[in-house]
Image 1 (tube, rainbow, N blue to C red):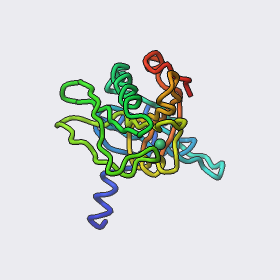
Image 2 (cartoon, rainbow, N blue to C red; image 1 turned 30 degrees about the vertical axis):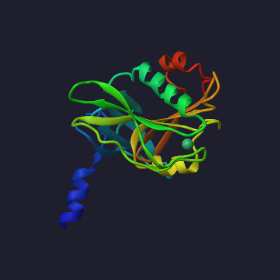
Image 3 (spheres, rainbow, N blue to C red; image 1 turned 135 degrees about the vertical axis):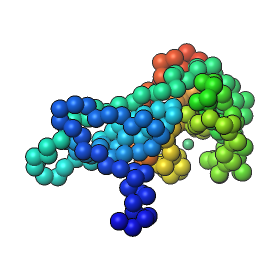
Length: 212
Ligand SMILES: [Zn+2]
C-alpha cells in the first residue's frame, strides 16, 4: 500500500472484536475503530482518559461473527478537584457580565491539576471571539474547558459545538454568573461525540447551582 494510507491506517487502525474474550484496551494515546457484533465503536485514549462509544450501527441484520464491546469512560487522571471549579466560579462572578474562559489541566508527570485563565482576543458580554491557548508545561493536558456566559443562561451554542468538535475534553459552561445559583451545562467531548450530563456531584456544593 502507498506510504500515506499505510501511515494513516497504522495510526488509526480497525480492530475485529473477539467473541470469546474481551478486546484488549489500547494502552497508549490514540484512536481505534472497534468492529463489534452490534456496530462500530470509537475508542479514544489520552493520558488522562479512555472513552469507548458506539458511533454506528449496521443497516442490515446480517450475522457479524465478532464480539461485544461496552461503552466505557475511564477517567485515568482521577476526579477534578472541586476547589478548581470554585476558582472558576469566582473568576466568572468577578468579571460578570463579561465572559471568561479557563482550562483545568492535569499533569501526567506529577498528577497535579491547576486552572489557567485564557485571554480572549475580543471579549464581551456576547460570545468570546477567539482566544489564545495557554502555554502548558510538559506533561500537562486539557481536562475541563470552562467558559462563562455572563448574565445569560448556560448552554452549548453552535459556536461551542464548532469549537469542541475535534477535542477530547470535558466542557463546562457557567451561566447567570451574577446570581447565587448560576446555571450550568456540562458535557464530554470526544472527537465529535458530545455527551451531556449533570455536573459531577462534588462540584455542586461549590457552585450552589441549579444543576442541569
Ligand atoms: Zn458558550
